[in-house]
Image (cartoon, rainbow, N blue to C red; front, side):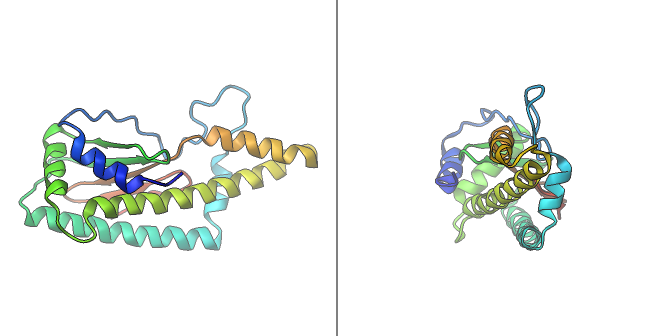
Length: 198
């Protein structure tokens, strides 16, 4: 599920023409968005409970710390390279490996040029992809825990638990991680997360 994220991001950045990246960002809190009427969806309350477990909270804290470090390093490197963003740039990485970038044409061109010329090790593109991979893994764990908990509470019989769990996970669909960075701030969102910013 997470294979090829780095390759997808690097490939996207090197092959997409300026202004051609269409963005179809999934809301981090919209697990049930687009679900059919009457079809069960993972509730926000179940997600919050699952995200609040000690293991998930520890992983989320590590992600938040990493996001703050990455955003600070990226802003410093952009400033050193003379890149001035006029607004926010959003990197959306989905669990199917696809990548979208949203922002003004000028900012997207500047970021693409910066990342293409970046010689740091690991590169910023690789760090963004790595952060997305870790967030998607945590998101999947949180959604699975929430679905199990919700299925156990709502199922009318023991035999219905697995069926309801399967339905809930099908509704969860493709997850998206959004890393947004501007000249003054940044944020990381993913399904089952509280928005973290720096």
